[in-house]
Length: 356
Image (cartoon, rainbow, N blue to C red; front, side, top):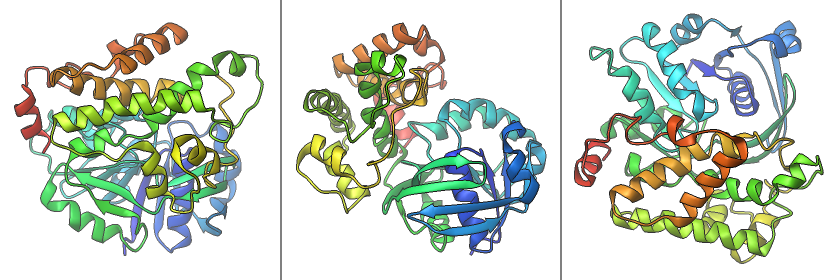
């Protein structure tokens, strides 16, 4: 089993993974850019998990020094919003050494390519970047050091930028995280960014409710018509996959795949009845990661793949346009377009070869 691990990001997922690893006897370094909100955790380094996981662990090091974090171990988990990937890769780059592994949990769509675009500045560097399809846990931070783990995903596809090393990394992580399964390609993992399909429509269709600060359950209060739009959005994702020779799992099937205890038929019922989703409230602001992360690092790169393959994506286009107008953010300028990833000169065939 891994003896030391670095966790980059001390939010919901980062603290959950750090606490669980520490409870299993792994030495943990937890990094966050800002330690101001972690005062209680800094005093005792103790993280308690309850709910689907009941465990307690003592974190070895808590730091806001990126050099300390990067040099602490050979296994680095990046558990931050995907919008931070580019800047984090730049900050980590000077301190990385050959033989290290970076796991993006999750990578969203093409987090690995985001890291590669930065790491190309050090062609001598030999590190492996792995990208997980989704976060291991559905969890909520109740206060620093106290995490409610609502659900644990049983199957999480993972792939590396060195396809021959994927199985080795999964085997290395299997004692801690048996949910990780090898995925056939980075392209497939990127197109299985299910969160970006689930989240934006719910925020857009409930924007006024959120702005009025009227609480509702994000998944449990799903309506048939909103679920219908999500299914239509998902149909575009599946069509893009077929254009690249990939048969993707529809979202209503994915819920049961990731959470086998889910009951019901169809997307709306399964969203309402998934035990891991049951008590998750909607965000308190429209400026939430369900738009600010899922649009630039999910919908936009998927739409880009569609454009390259000649696939029309009217629902994706509309969601990008409406989200940009609602938040007054130019997501095309900042998002994971092929241009921003340095891949705009590639044909569809060349892109498939690059990320196979």
